[in-house]
Image (cartoon, rainbow, N blue to C red; front, side, top):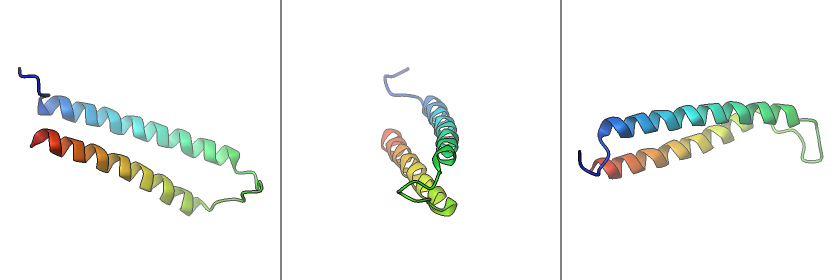
Length: 73
């Protein structure tokens, strides 16, 4: 096999990364829920939190897809 990664390996790594992102997202949600206590910063609406988290995860996934496209070309 050449030094380039096989498509199957890339898909496996991407799947592993997506699972890691989902676990991390769950942890972040739990931490944000624990720390919402009405402090000086104020509470951020749940909808805004989900939007920010979704945007972050989307950016990470977009970056991984861009890398995959470069590798597969």
